[in-house]
Image 1 (cartoon, rainbow, N blue to C red):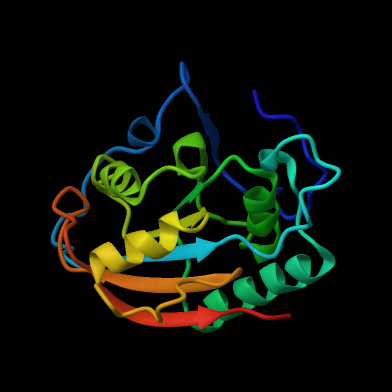
Image 2: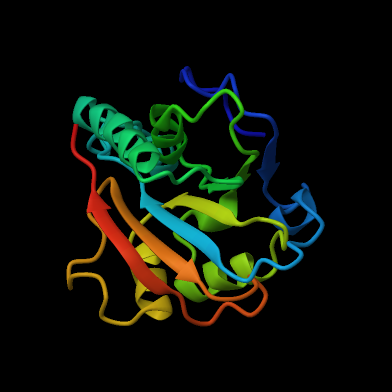
Length: 197
């Protein structure tokens, strides 16, 4: 079980599922299909700036810095300005990703959130497999995670579209998925933004 963290902004979240070994997985969180819909949107968001590792006992426990909190709010503002509202959020179990999610201030009718431990420093190919095995009825999916995984995943989907340095903290890559999640191979980069507050 994840330790509670004092963050605001998650009160409107409809469903929270924690995914670690022995618990339900992302693919079990949703079911159904998108009849007639062929294009989907994948939003990759690298967590906002975190504090230095000291004095935290583990990397998972590192919270956002004051700048990171401001940047997370700015990321949420940018997503809303672009009309990007996720149907489902996949978020790493790290404190800094959960605090980034809270800073986005998703609407009261916010999408379900799945805290997925496999997003914490897992390889990009594993994350791609996670997306392929996931919820077929989701049209807009927000993934909040870490580098190098998210930058590598973006590059797998649309090679050389991101700058060489990849996603900075609070970096957002919006990809257009031309078909189903199960068939996800390529997805053109539609927008790239680094949120600063």
